[in-house]
Image (cartoon, rainbow, N blue to C red; front, side, top):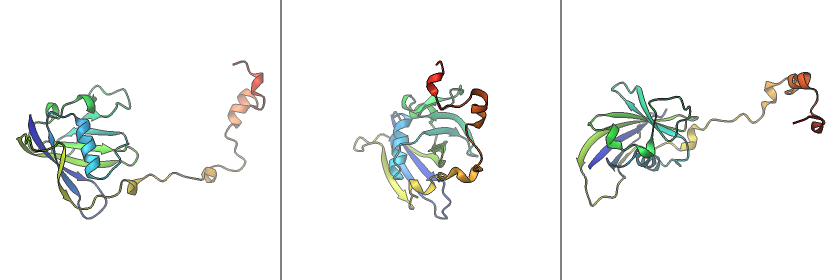
Length: 176
């Protein structure tokens, strides 16, 4: 077992950078790193997220996610059952962490140190806080409250269906 220190930089539109240094036991699974990143940046942690193995150019590689949203990826592995040391084992190794696929919070995660386990520490632990993290809600997608502008008043959402099958006024007349 080793102690891994990750530097986690949040990608924001702000001029000032915000990052956190998080130490974690390398034998922990990726879901613990996911939880510790959310805690360190004061995010709720209730959204879908994935880690991606990355290279020097921060390109997305193999996905390590909370759940496979598409069911089509042969490379997908689950956070809860994947030990960090199985995928990350070298200083300067990079990961992308994407949280909330609607708001697309992106974090650049780099392994900056490997040390022996310190039995006096409780892992994971945020060891350095630099810069103010944006609030999770600052990047929320604004939902359109009034869709009337998208429809002409004469339009009928069910018109095509009614033309094909008749009116829905008496649903009991249909043999379901």
